[in-house]
Image (cartoon, helix red, strand yellow):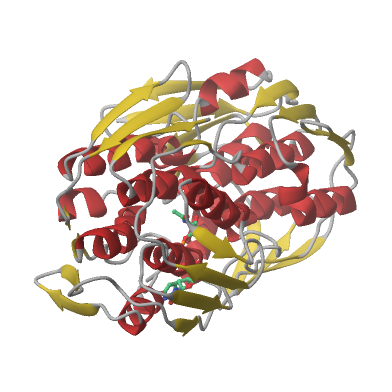
Length: 423
Ligand code: UD1
């Protein structure tokens, strides 16, 4: 079993360069299913989830080549892909569900294993299903699979989402681009990753209006073309580096980043006392003292991202003062707090609130990452804890952070991978 050994105490200093966003590239890969032929996606992060999605596309009959040195994926989609996404892949990565929309709209059928719960909560699919039904699909669930079918093309419809769900917005946009007539998605998500996929779909020939707003209007077309598209940089990885710079009292420049995608998080860090410089191709964060605590409320974009919540709890754990952190998206995300407590953090949770009382130092211990972002939060805490922290569950971190350990080393952290036989 692989672990990370993190020795606290070194400030992070230097530069890191971002690659594309995990939460975008997986959907861009699924979107290639909408057009037969060869599409190329660039700025692809070298992470486990990309490999899982590549394997899923191969099982559907696509050829997928991943050239890691050039960060590009070349995907050749057949005239008639298969329409079944098996449980063994969906259980490894919930985002596999994003093939549902493209398959049903292009082939009239999609059998996608139900992902079940995961470590950050129940995460329903009701909005995906309701929207597809409104567009004329019959959606049932049998033997652990979601079966979506349509005789002929889906038909355009008006869909009002109860919540601006990222996944449901993506499923419905991808379904609508080949549907017959106009689809209006109200209360749509506005994340940069949604803009990224809409931009790619437009380049493929889709007619989408209102990109970046809460109302997306899609007029279906008969067919789409393959495309070459560059993945938007990963704002969550960018925010993780920014928080790490502040916690370690370091000075980190993040290149190939869009600072405007992180406005709230960077403002929060400025409130903590950090200096933030926005650069043409990214930003620089520096800090020369103990951070002030800062309250956080997670919300859909442009609100504070839930995917940075664990990292900011870790920051507050060593800040001066007390902070209230409110989690509005994933109820189980506070599970990681128990692990943080093993490092000496003082965090109390009550429902979807966490009260974090900052301590002047944390003390190293073995801890377990339960999901990607919890893993990042624990590594950040390890960077400031006294002694050597061992982080188990490294596979979670590998799912979302490309080259995390080499980048940390390059910034001056004392961190390494190790193999242990058991705990
Ligand atoms: C995506 C991101 C995830 C991020 C989240 C919110 C990917 C692969 N993952 O997840 O990292 O934390 O956006 O920014 O892109 N919900 C329902 N019914 C539905 C759909 C969603 O109840 O049909 C609920 C979920 O349980 C959750 C909330 O809505 O409480 C937000 O979910 P959603 O925005 O859909 O997140 P994901 O697309 O799953």
